[in-house]
Image (cartoon, rainbow, N blue to C red; front, side):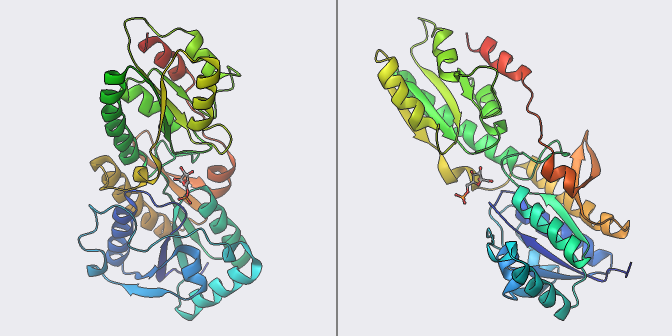
Length: 325
Ligand code: F6P
């Protein structure tokens, strides 16, 4: 295997707070080890359109505290085609970039896996998604910040829910994964969470109402994972029809969940994973995601990170039920 001398970095998919801290860590660790570094703008689209610039230590100054990604992000359609990936490879070769580090979620790492197979290009992934749904890592970049953002919002919603004695259905991100919904519900003292993974009870709304809302409680908060078919609006309609005695309102938190300055935990995580990516390249690793398990950096093969599903802790459903009596 030819020795890696020059590394390209890109961010792809939904942005996540902490991506900038990761870009900074990768850049500076790489420069310390003598690699040349390139910033690739707008995800895989930037690789295809040759939006590639040399990065120095100054390129990543004053960004550790900033949300979003200085490299911009995109969900590239062109990169899903063989022609797009060919163009991307040609551009990498023209800059003599011989390894790629991708910070992103499931779709982004899938792109890296296919590219690495087709072109014998060493690719390293960093788990960058607020959804926390990548297998093999205890936590992903952005998840902690988003969880804290949601909890702050729910604390505020509770004030008005209480004053008006209402049920609030608060919709949070994570269309295929309930980590944000479940843990924000626990952290904010919500009465219930409706998550995609909970198929133990076919009708989660019935389960919540059926448990009975304690008489002395004059309001309830239910956190609902977003879903095109059965998000918070769907459940609100049902409450209106099936339980007209309750006054119900919906609050969809939307993209404010993805913004904001990363938490200390996300900054530390991103810094460790970024440094870990460069160590992985020095170790001759390729086609792995850098994860963290039990506070140790681990290498997770792309196929596992992408294809295996990360289990949610179902016991927490019971804990939430019990604590909200
Ligand atoms: O994957 C991250 C995520 O924020 C999901 O939680 C959400 O479903 C999706 O991205 C929203 O994507 P977009 O910004 O393209 O609407």
